[in-house]
Image 1 (tube, one colour):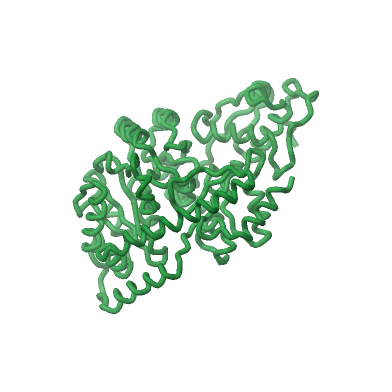
Image 2: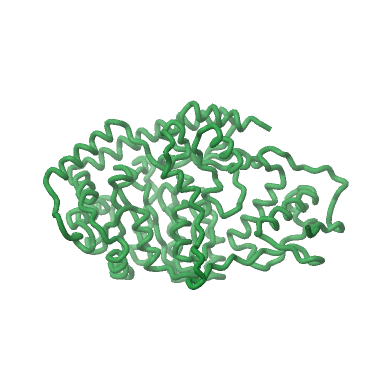
Length: 477
C-alpha cells in the first residue's frame, strides 16, 4: 500500500482528537469542509487542497486528524495525492459512452423511502404522507363517482392533458395572483414525470446543471439518468447561496438550476422574496432556466405565506418552469402532475410530453378535476396542514428533549434534524435498520460519499417506538 503520509507536515506530539462515535470525530469536520468546497465549486478538479498544516490551523484540529481525513478522501476517490506536492481534487468521473454497453449506475438505495414494505409506524424516514382514514374514504368516494360515469375506451386524450383540469389549474393559480393562459399548462402522470419531461427537453448528456444541497434524491436520479454533470449550490435558511450560485454560473455556464421555492425537500424551508428576486436576476444575466419543483407548495400554511411566493409569480414565466401536482394531497397512487411554462418553453415541452408521457391518465386527471371543481381540494389541504402543524410541534418537542437540533420548517410533512458534528447518519441508519426501522439519513440528500449528521423525519409516521430506538442508538458512544 502506498504511504500517503507526509512526515514533514505531521504533528505527532499532539494527541488524536478523533472520537469513534459513529465513525466520526473531528476528522469529520475536515471531511465536510473539503466535500462542501468541492460541491459548491470553491475547489475544482485538479486544484490543490490546503496543506495539512494550513487546514489544521484553519479548522483548529491536529495535523494528524487532517492527515487521517485526507487519507479517507483519497480512499474514496474524491481527492488524489502527488508525492512531494500535496493533495488535489479528483476530476469528475466520466459517463460511459453509449457504445460502451455499460449502463449508467444510479444509486437506488434512497428510493426505498417511497417503495417500502415497512409498516407506517416503523417508517420514520418515509417520503409518503400517510393520510387519515377519513381522507382515504373521501378519495374513494370521488374515485367511485368518476369511474361510475364511464370512461372512453380508446385514445390517449388531449395532447396537453384533460382540458377541464387545465382550466381548473389556471383558476387555482389565478387565485394566488398568477395569470397564465390555459395553453401554458400541460399535465403529466406526476411531479417526477413532469420533472423528467422538463429535464429531457432542456438537458443534453454532459450538460452542466445546478441543484441545491441538500436536495431531493429524485432530482439527482432524474438528472443522472439524462447524463447531466451536476454541481451543487448550498441551501441556506432563506434559499440558495447566491454568492456560490454566481461563481458556478461564471465558471461553468450551467443550463438549468433545479430549485424548490416553497417547502423544499428535505429541509422544509422556503425561498424569501428577496432571494427569489436575486435568483431571477441571475437567471436573466446568465441565460439560466429555473425549474421550480413546487411538489409541497399546497402544504404551505396560509398564515406563513406572507413574504413568500413561487418563482413564476416574480418571473412572469420568462425563465421559470413551474412543476406541481396532486400526489402529496390525494396520494401517489391517484395523483397527477402539471407543468406551467411560458412561450419560451411550452411548445418544446408539449412535444416531449407526447413521447415521454404516452398513456392514458383519464382517471387521475378526472379525480383531480373533481377535487378542484367541487372545492374538496382546498378543504383537504386545510385539514392536512392542520394535521402536519400539530404533528410537527409534538415531534419537535421529542427532539428538543434529546438535544437534537431541528431546522424550523415553514410547513410540509418532514422535519430536518441534525444529530451533531460527530454523528454519521449512514451508520446510525444501518443500526436503525437492524432494529426494523426505515430512516432517511442525510447522506441520501447530500453529494455522494459525503458524511452527514442529518436525518429527515416524517411527521405522519414517526412513532414513539422509533423515537425511543433512535434515542437509544444516539446515546451510544
